[in-house]
Image (cartoon, rainbow, N blue to C red; front, side, top):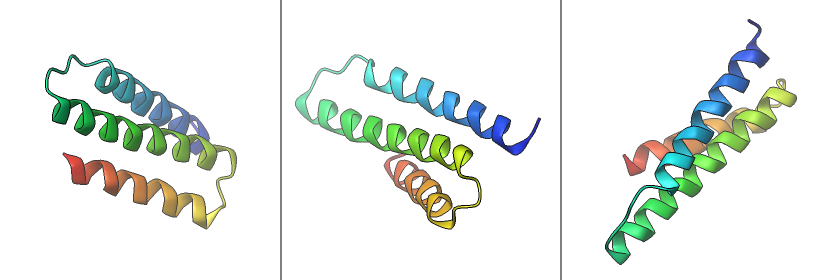
Length: 76
């Protein structure tokens, strides 16, 4: 596989993670907020990965991918 193929599979993994987190059953209002913010971080990460796969030589997109991954890891 090339790097672009690996990034597409990584994109699919983060999309599935975001779907599972977004559809997760929540009961309390605070749980809704926390899950929504984490879902947005996961979606931002997936989008950054997909756009970076399209433009692999972009330094800013690499920084966006790393930043969104840190944002998601901060929630965990």
